[in-house]
Length: 251
Image 1 (spheres, one colour):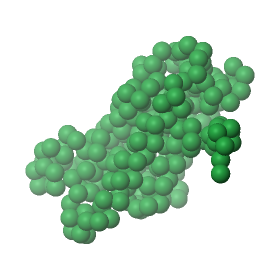
Image 2 (tube, rainbow, N blue to C red; image 1 turned 180 degrees about the horizontal axis):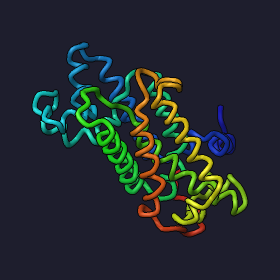
Image 3 (cartoon, rainbow, N blue to C red; image 1 turned 45 degrees about the horizontal axis):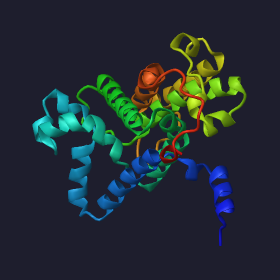
Image 4 (cartoon, rainbow, N blue to C red; image 1 turned 90 degrees about the horizontal axis):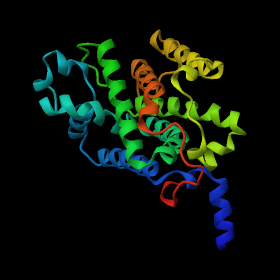
């Protein structure tokens, strides 16, 4: 049996117990969508996936002919992030969501977190559309939104390190100073991370990287979501918040 003190220590040491409820809620939604799909007949599941997926051909005259019709031409900018090709794809994006979503959500709150993640998902889909106009292949997965969360996190991460240590980002992200844009693009550490991210996706573009579980890597969406998050995160919350612990529901 656990005492209250032991449970508190466990929560302090185990990151998943400290994940904000909105992050766990987002993870729960994508898991439920995947499990629900497993219960559908194969043909119906295929139609559901196509209705939720982002398909560039919708905007080149095929919207009415594809599952979901004109409604999906609007909703798929977001709904593509709810669908994953298989369990491995879901686990990968779920792990990244937990890794990078926590500090962002604890800093800006549930509503702004959802708004920011949604914005990054839309930016990812828009970038994919611009690079693949007329493509009939579907793009699915939360990786574009997660890439935006990763970019937002590094604007806090290195600032936290400069303020005294990485632990501050976990224990009190609201006290961390958010790097301004000029500082962000002048920081060698952020430029190095960004460069590595670009190289990884460039290798994917020419087929030299490990494919994403369940299909090819949508590298355009990764880059679109990442740069959307890197540039716009400051619009979703003040540069520095009160040096107080986050509310219990955001821990």
